Structure formats: structure tokens, C-alpha cells
Image (tube, rainbow, N blue to C red; front, side, top):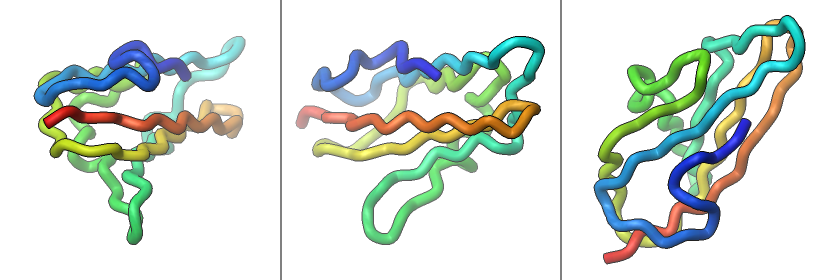
Length: 96
């Protein structure tokens, strides 16, 4: 899994596009039902339903994300058809 946009640790201004690419190994396929996007605050907030239309086997392509100013820790997890899981932790820094 690779974050394509925004650049890691780069400050962004809302609305912005969020692009993450999924990469399966060998003959395995991405298990779309396993994709989870969590906002890591207390308590955790499952953002997956809000991004459902932006999730495909290629990754997440969410256009014009409206995110409040501040620093937001997000964890994206996905499994392939062979049960291998990968996680991506990203910090979104949104300017005022």
C-alpha cells in the first residue's frame, strides 16, 4: 500500500484529494471487504462507510476531502485474498 497524495508529512488545505494505491503480491487479489479506514482518536472513528464509493481494488481515490483543521492520525488496513494484511499510518496536517 502506498500513499500517493497528499505527500507524507505535507500540510494540506481542505478540500484535498486523498489517493492511496493498493498493491497485491503475486496472484493474490485485494479483498475489498477487508479495507478499513480508522481515525485514531479516542474513541476510534470508522471512516470506511464514508469512503466506500472511493474504494476499489486499485486503492482509495477520494476527491475533495473536507477535513477540519488540525492534525489527524489515520490507519488504513487491507488484506489480500491469501489473508496477508498491511497497514498504513498517516498523519494528515490540515491548515486553517
